[in-house]
Length: 294
Image (cartoon, rainbow, N blue to C red; front, side, top):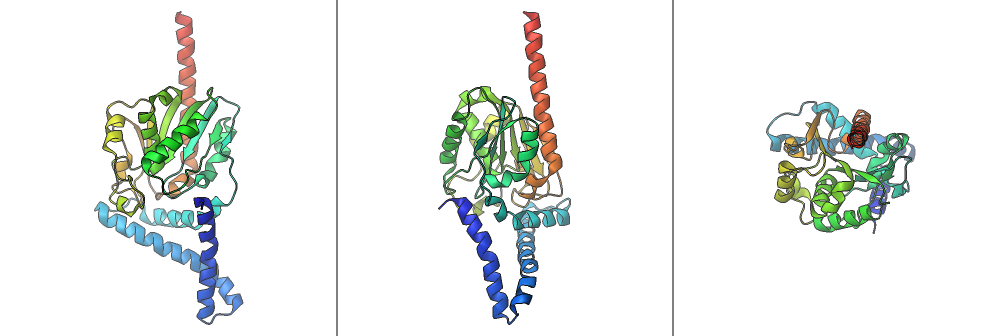
């Protein structure tokens, strides 16, 4: 069963279960319906409070903006299931010969990128937001699937590879294992990606989701493409938070957002699109300079 369908079913079953519990407690239908959404959000607040508490214990130091991060993460997870409902085209060509390839993390789908669609397309870029299925793939299987997805894109398109969480690690592995893709890559951007592993990695249910020494070494010693790592200092899943950074990368540190809520930061999206525009202008200026010197 596709993960997108599983997430939608889960999102629909949760209110039904809560309604049944409220009815079993003796509330009328009207009161049960009025209490439903506050109860659902209260459950999410409690779930995220537990996650942040465990992360706080494992990291051994306080968060910078814990209450704001906890609230934003609770909201992000509350609407997460709804993001899986719309049908998203896997590839949309833009007016410019550059395509953003947005790769989701573990147990997610391309629906997590819903807030990225309008800014990227407004800038004239193409967009590819694949669902990696089935969600129980090993890391190497995901990397091979990514290679095929990228290979199927028009060959005249340059690529901006953006990965959230494990998606960023898998994109780095894809560039390492298939070096022919590096020439097409304008920039690799990883968001809250545990390049050096996470103390919470044991929560993963699929094989091969621990830290990757090989990709660490490749990225740290000689990055093949310009690399940006976005790190949330209030990450509730990547512990320690600096595991999402790399020595030779442009590391951008943000606070007040948890692991999933990081994707909803409109200022982050705007900054990254501006970075790509600057990369392309630099590349075009270099080409003009080279032609003038010939």
